[in-house]
Image 1 (cartoon, rainbow, N blue to C red):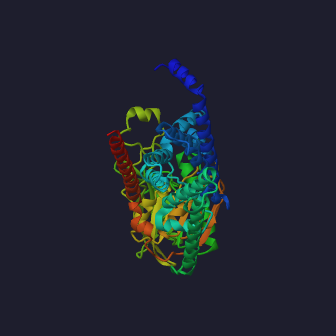
Image 2 (spheres, one colour; image 1 turned 90 degrees about the vertical axis):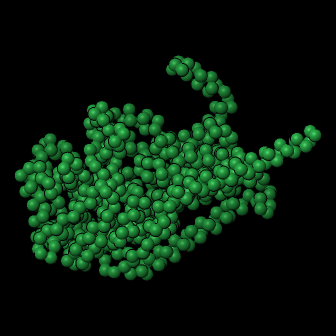
Image 3 (cartoon, rainbow, N blue to C red; image 1 turned 45 degrees about the vertical axis):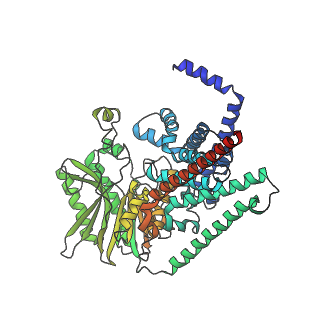
Length: 564
């Protein structure tokens, strides 16, 4: 079909009043819910309250949806509005990184919205499928199936930021504690059911305001309220138990945030040697300032703070810089964790290096290679990797993926051995990956990140909140070092004990409480969430279709007898 013919057809469709009204209603509902979702994402002290009714406007408009194409439209609209209102910073950041125009990136961003947020499409389609099959008995079944589809798709589909609505619960210390049981995505499942319950009460009130008994309009909302109160009570009880638990002596950690971000600009102005010299001098100076405040168990610098390979120098100057870092660790006696590149043959990895003094007085080295690489900027999938693709995207990354989660032991002269779980930037967004590492016996999560490519503090705040949920899910404290913010110390209950300012030179020297080592349900069984949820969707859909088919066959037999 030509563009002219398509335009004419769209005009004819738009002139259809019924369709125009339907599109307007669906758009209003999706926009209202997307706006509430943007409020949830702000993670301010009271913004979490919006999470409990965030989807109600969208769900109310979906009560009018009777066709699959309308369900698809509703889900697509929700995807578009949510990426536009929740992630408005991304097109600017992507355009700046790729050297493209935001005017070009924005339309592409909105066009790809259903792929970036596919859970809305899955929710709308499954909800409609269950409700259409047996309208008399499927309100609860549809809510459960659609919510399971929503979260199941979030877990298995490679979403860019692994975001989910329950991240908005972080400001509430009590409500966020449930993540140790089912993870933050499991909390999203509960929130969806809460929203469905409130929606059902509103629908009942509109259709039969005087109904009594099991059909009373307030009954679904009352059940939701009881469930939310039980959830809150569980959180308060867990906070009290965590406060009473003794995980041993606290670890003293220093974090350096030098706010040096424009490495390419520095190289252009000063050359490669002076750039590395400037970076190291700044970090040595800030580290000395931290050490002057208190004895440290661990000193942490950010991701790729050392902008070259470590341990495999490419020049004599590089070898001298490598040695200088080792000498600093030997002189101070403080274990150092920092980000750099690690080379193996022709392959390079984004790595975290651990330098410690061994009993023989030498500097021992260990490393962790980043596993979860950011698409395109760090790693191009083999199916897409080609000279043509790299020619079109000269900024595309070439790093290789590391082998997986691991525990690195660090010997502190103050508190002895510390078992760390190192993570680099994107790693921390994957709950299952972090749980896998925690199961190996870690005491402390150490996260290195480079958030300097974000245009303002909104994305770093989202990144920090996502990281904080990893501490709740594993009950491990966390040290998070970034080059420009937001660096932080996170307790096992997800509290931000200390944090730096965004886009400012800053340091932290703080006591990190050790959590009582436990294996949470999320660590033990978190890998089963996606299979269980998707199996639940299949079961409920199958049961509904079987029941509907049985009713149709019974009706057909009745009509046959009537004709006879």
